[in-house]
Length: 81
Image 1 (cartoon, helix red, strand yellow):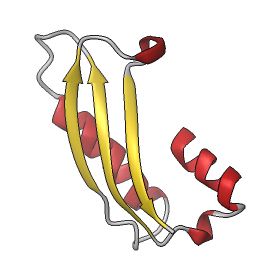
Image 2 (cartoon, helix red, strand yellow; image 1 turned 30 degrees about the horizontal axis):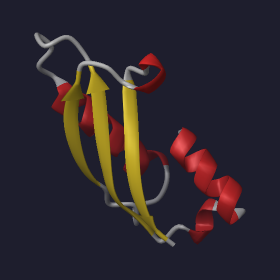
Image 3 (cartoon, one colour; image 1 turned 45 degrees about the vertical axis):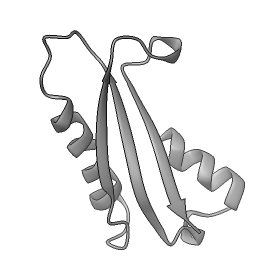
Image 4 (cartoon, helix red, strand yellow; image 1 turned 180 degrees about the vertical axis):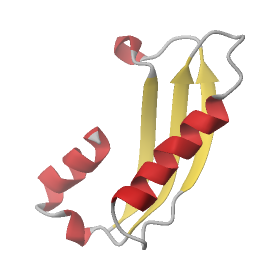
């Protein structure tokens, strides 16, 4: 949601976004947690279902032992405007 809010702030409207090309989901978790792909799928589904059908998103995921500000999930997004 924060990534979309930043896009809206800089573009004035999310209607200016033609598509979200890719998101990379970084999941901070214990090494025994094995469902990082499900977290990434949920993030991708949120972009597609929550907004427009034109936002066909490819999601990749990466496990990390620590993240900035101790975030549980970080998302890197590439959008076409």
